[in-house]
Image 1 (cartoon, rainbow, N blue to C red):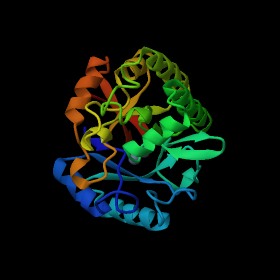
Image 2: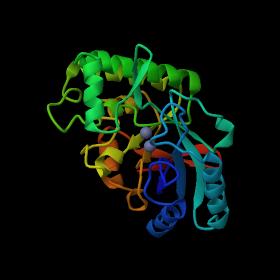
Image 3: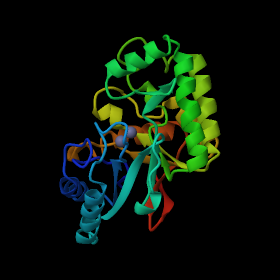
Image 4: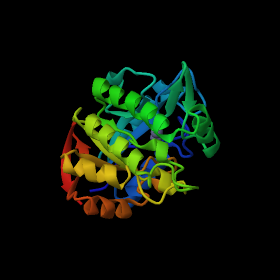
Length: 266
Ligand SMILES: [Zn+2]
Ligand SMILES: [Zn+2]
């Protein structure tokens, strides 16, 4: 079983057209390909879709054209800061990309500089930063119940680039484990996301090992996703990620088929 539900294209900040991604998926033997363009956010147009109607039309046309070769889904990556009309999409991937303080939003993952800015805003208090991120995101997850939860611990994106602020910090890990336990009560599916590996920032997927083990311990379901921004990377590091999932105890992952999640062996 080969599937991906986190795929960006030229309709947002990706490098490939939807058709280039479809052709790559067919070549690689995919069963299911879900597109997840960044949902439009009026306060930040730097990365998100401007032509959502064109995106949906293009993906649905491709779904018809390639229906004998591949199941294609038109999803969306919604930011927790701006809710969309979810009935327009086949599934909702819910993510959080900002911190907020005194009514101002700060992007956390655009580049290492913007993360440094976030640290400044929180006076270098790593736990306060993490608390701000998770409290808002978990609250969104519990209220919104997205079909899939995107890169749960995105704040750790740059953690391997210098001194580890999060991943080797027991206080952070305790806080993050408590957050993911609370989020999991919504019953949503979590993604194991290899996107930061393909972009050279991380050597392991989101979520980090303690969180992945927690998801297994509490019986949460996981989907394997690449957060791909290029046709060539739609299955990037999937075998490595599956090995980590097995180490965390998982024997199956889930895929989306005919409107529901179904398990397959990994
Ligand atoms: Zn994202
Ligand atoms: Zn994404």
